[in-house]
Structures are given as C-alpha cells and as structure tokens.
Image (tube, rainbow, N blue to C red; front, side, top):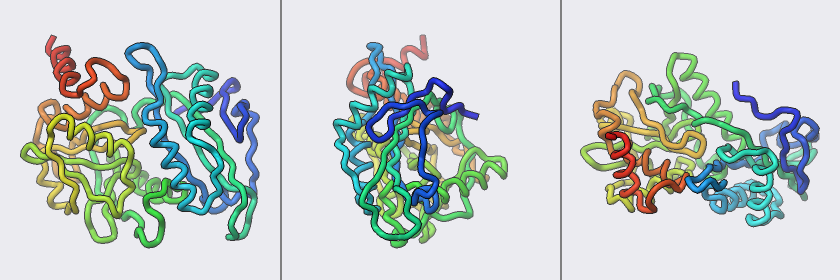
Length: 309
C-alpha cells in the first residue's frame, strides 16, 4: 500500500500549511456524505536540469475551476496563487517527482441547498506510475460510464469515481490489471482513470469527446501526434473494432502512458517496442521531464540510440 503521509508531512489547507496528521475536516461536510467535491490529479517532475516542474499546472487548476463551477461550488482562488502554493508545498515536503491532489470540498450541509463557501486542500506524495510500467491485461467491464445527461461528465467530480472504483475492483478481482468501460450506447469510452488510444496500420484512434472525460494527458498525446506527424482520428469506437487493433494504451496524469498486452481474450499483435504507441510513450516522458531536445522526434531518436547503445 502507498504511504501517503507521515508525522512530518505538510499539506496546504485553506491558505495555511499544516501537518497532515493535524488537519481536520467537518464530518458533516456535504462532500463526505454525498461525494460533492471536485479534484485534480497533477504530477511534478525533476527535470534534466534538476529543477522541480509541475506539468501543465495552469491547465489543471483551470479545469479545477471549471469543475467547481459546473457543480455550483463557490471558487475564489486564482490559478497563480494555487500554483505558487503547490510549489511551496512540494518544497516543504522535499518532493520533486510527486503526485499532487487538490480537492475543493463543501462545508457542513445535510440539505441540497446551494453552499455559500467552499474549502480547498492540496496534498502531495511520491507515487510511481498508477498502473505500473508493464503491459496491461485489460477486461471489458460490466459497468458502463455514466450517462452524460445525468452528470456534467466533463467535471472531475469525486462522486463520479465510485463508477471507476467498481469497474477497477471488478477487473482486478477476476485477475486482470485494469478495466475498460463502454458508454451507454456500447461504444468504447475509457478506463477507470485514463483515456484510451489504439493504433492500426500506422494510424492512431481515440474515442471522441461526449461520453468521456477528455483528459489533459490525452490533449498532450494529441499534441505530440501532431508534432511527430502521426495521424490520429477521434471517433466512436466499437469493442469489435478495438479487438482488431495492432496496439493500444491508456494515458492519464497518474498512469502516464502505459500499453496493453491484451483485452479480454484478444492479444495485441504488434510488438510494443516497434509501435507508434511506444514512440509516444518515450516522447511523453521526455516532454514531462524536459529531457533531451525540445522536439519530440529528436528526443525519440536520442532515446532509441541510447537503447541500442
């Protein structure tokens, strides 16, 4: 089990830095009773120059703001102030390669009336890639992604993730590494906490927005595809189509970019190291750590030369 904090761990809560072991939350909070909160998953990295860099801090904190507003949660913080606080938090905890979790949560409220205030906490801890680094054995879940007419599906809301937990636990209980969820129409949607890409005959595909949470890592992968000249299409994808793919991978802030070995009884035939997906995995790692040349193509070439050497 991951150790998230100890007696010396510091967190940021409502404008102050306090020990995690001494922090308090109201047990009558609407967030605790109803899952009414929003959060972000952010990563920081030690760069090649030795500096600490929060990857796409602005994009993450702006999405936190949008999520709060979609859930009618008051939000009075600026992206600049939260970014500054997060860098200070990392420094106080002696962290560089870290996972960062800001949560906006509600006050005590046992009704469904609008709140007039919100609270915020930012936590950070050391974490390896969420799904590990080996190729994944994935199972199509019996659980579906929620109907977007029932929720603001683009909000990163805590309550939505009960669906993710159930799907992931189901898969792991049956001996798989992770789950794949379909949407209400039977199209491939995403993983419990990551977006999906697959490749076939030199082209990449990913589910179109609509019934998915289009992640910040997903957007980064799309940008890398453009820079590397890799064709990519966003479309509705059937499970049968996915099981004709050459390779596939999940991507997300916590998971980073991790390939599939198989889906249900289908084994992806393309050797991972020979895939476009692997090239994107390398490019993403160089991107977040600012290692090597700025252009992803040059970074990939350098990494491949290192492997050969």
